[in-house]
Length: 110
Image (tube, rainbow, N blue to C red; front, side):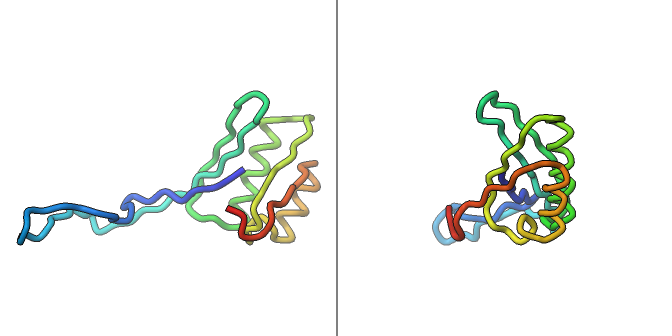
């Protein structure tokens, strides 16, 4: 399981312009954000996705419910980093209620 933040305006890494001229970068003035939550079944390749506006505990809990709906009555082992939304008390309580086992990666693990 992992999350990624998608932005309307990705960070500008590099650009080019003729020597001595200012590069023109068209912008909207907005920077919309969406968080994409996903879990991959390594056995079947099935992908469960949800999206949210933020990356908070309640959003993670919504993803846990979606995951349980996708795999009713089956064991779920979820490999996670130790982000605050994952380690929050209510997130862990909900995972236990939904019979989802949370497995933790070491801190600062890429």
